[in-house]
Length: 390
Image 1 (cartoon, rainbow, N blue to C red):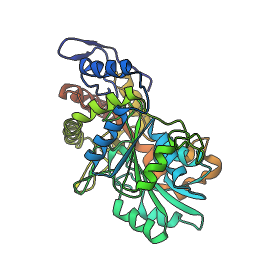
Image 2: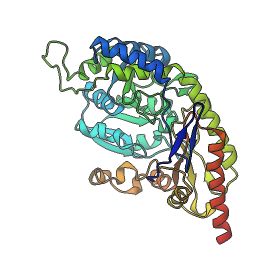
Image 3: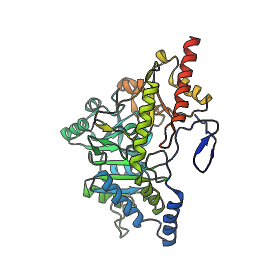
Image 4: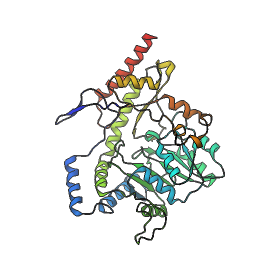
């Protein structure tokens, strides 16, 4: 939906005049960030400087990994990782994900092979991966969807048994935990996004996290065209450097990250409690012992029980001034860019079903209970109206 709610600000708050937006970035104190940015500008060092190195050290400490490499975007990070691992052949990816997951493989000349998702968690199914593995498979690239950790043990066992690499697209998941550990140190490598819709924000940017020293070094070289410092490029890299200015914002954003994740989990509980009794509305699960960032809060809409499908509910909410998205429809295998290689829905029955039901509704870290209640009331009202009409 294209609706952009108008808002006005006071010294204490933001008041939405005619709608509820899908999300709002969490921006650190502008005055404090401005001082650090002025220092960077006066230094004349805008890339390859101390602010990026400080961010990498702080991120590695937070995630509990040996190495973090700051890059210009999560997509660039995924592209670099796949290049640095020197892969060939096929990479198994979910179709229920943002297109960048598959794009990173395709840009490296690898063939994305789409695997189905688990119907409860909406993350790549280890069973589907087992069925998709072939003689050309060199890696699994799984997504922590909405910040929900994948079945890490299941995917790890499959990767080890088949002697292939395991990479996590952790775009949504900086701050998510699995069995008490932050994501970042699982598989061979995990790549996070710091774009404006994420819980940790750099404006634009990404973080590659790994315990593999050689891989980290190749990613550092790769983000600077593959240049090790003497302009004799070791391999075909990218310009994927993070600027010092983006690192300033990301470092400030990291400082209160846990509080924002706490708030988003509170909001998710409120939504689940207040929408849980509405017929036809259910929710993806988060595993026992896991913690999601809830980068997005997505509901599943059963057309028969609710009285309309997810598209219809999205349109009705738009009429009520409430912004939504259909994350993720179309799934990647149905996109024009991938139809020739993707095959039919018969290979991805859960993806096909879930992509018809998903609707992402508003959530941001500073969202107030009254704004959440406005969304809940609108969904309840739409259901009641349809039931009465029926």
